[in-house]
Length: 301
Image 1 (cartoon, rainbow, N blue to C red):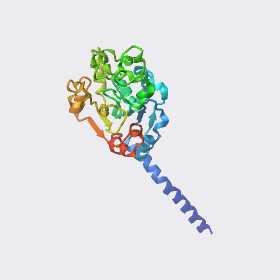
Image 2: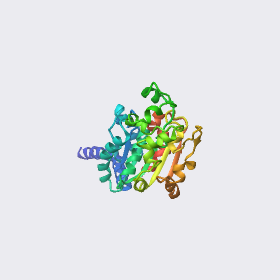
Image 3: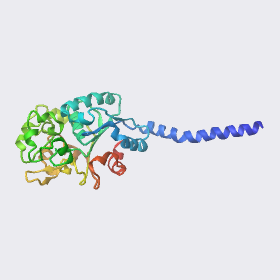
Image 4: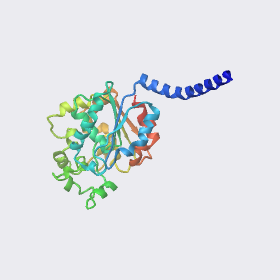
């Protein structure tokens, strides 16, 4: 009887150990590999709740990763001016950076991609390794989308400049990066945000901001032709319209050729990457596992 009891006890212990080993192995692997914390910044009209799938993808592929979706400027508050959002997100993100001796990764979606660029420009001691820009209008926005119709029902893309390029318009986030190719002078002289971080008009901080931005280790630009919101979709990879609404790709853009904030330098370093995925509508970029596996997963080490 005693021997039988001992055998049953040993089997139970063995069974528990069998369940614990995979978990322990995952934790030890995370500790050895040392996955860097991942910080996610959402886009227009989003909230942190919209990124549960992305968090799940990261935790499954990189067990033990500390993933933080910053819960600020949700939903309607995402229309607040971009610089206000930059300051708010920066204040929330900075302590995470300070507690990450080996650095952090950014995944910044849609409008959040521009928020992150602002943070990376003005923060001299950031420690971002991979800056993953997920379908973000990095070169600006110019299109008749459902978002535009919802926000400004009395306007279309051809006349929105009448509102956006005013002091009142610049209090709305989307106007801070509205880039009308037919009114370049107005854009350059009025935009309180995009024209500044792109150094498209004289900016006394441009040299410092470029140095700060270039502290990232990798820039990953993700987008695709079926996005339906970012217009042109190539803006997610720094392409944009000329005054005939012909898309000029990044390598022919003035801000690249003159290396005004570091894109050409990143390319020369071998640290500029593009990932183009067809068939993805704008609202699904952060929830699509193929996008994660193809464009994001390998940069989170």
